[in-house]
Length: 170
Image (cartoon, rainbow, N blue to C red; front, side, top):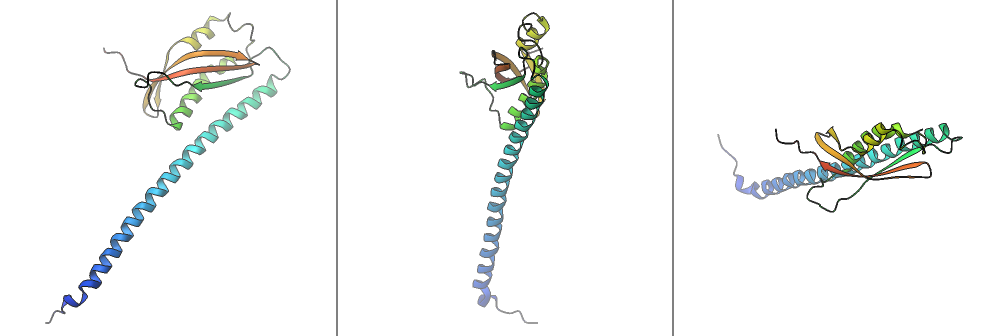
């Protein structure tokens, strides 16, 4: 049995090998670009969903309390940057939206409360001023510290600092 000489096909085999390697590298680059675009799309989608929930809640509260002019009608939450960058964790948009959602649920007790009676209820004041730990936010624990609370035009605005929670040594 006779084997054909492969010296004649050596350049053709090299060309096919380079073509297959080029296909693999191109597929890897295309997959990387697709993943980056999908992640950007997912982040913007989650931000838009958060804004939609906030706007729907805002519209519901405005229509519910439209005749009452001395009640808190909406919440506006902001995460403030801290001067000490080493303590502040890098928060992505998903973590920020989840934290804001949980804080908004906790502070929703203020909606509908009279702006003149808010200081008389100690439970509300304690709830807003204590350092609270939010656990299980995308597999991490965070503490929220309220820095500034401002009530203007029936809107409760809260600036807060987010820190990664480290449990005390036991």
